[in-house]
Image (cartoon, rainbow, N blue to C red; front, side):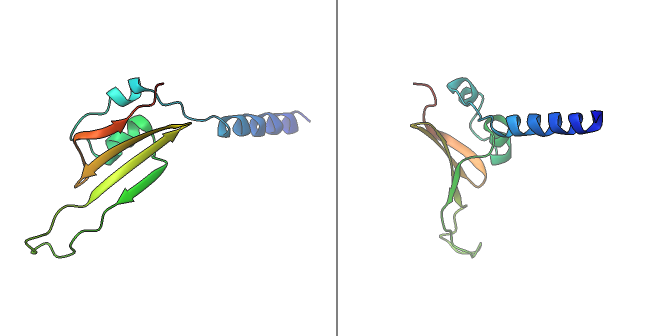
Length: 101
């Protein structure tokens, strides 16, 4: 009987934790710095809600070859924050939007 109670309690806690939404603020966003990698940003803000990647020339020898551009898009309520990376590094002025109202 005790083991069943513990299992029910554990299941309830897991369900409660799954329902917790992340709360992002501009204080979190201020921790993000230019030249951070996507993984470093994710360690601060968590995974983005959407990722957009631009197509690039597949040939590295091509004179028009440029590193790919990736945009991490975070959506919280009616607020959207976009972070722009080139070659897996956050570019200067690569943050647009705000989490706070």
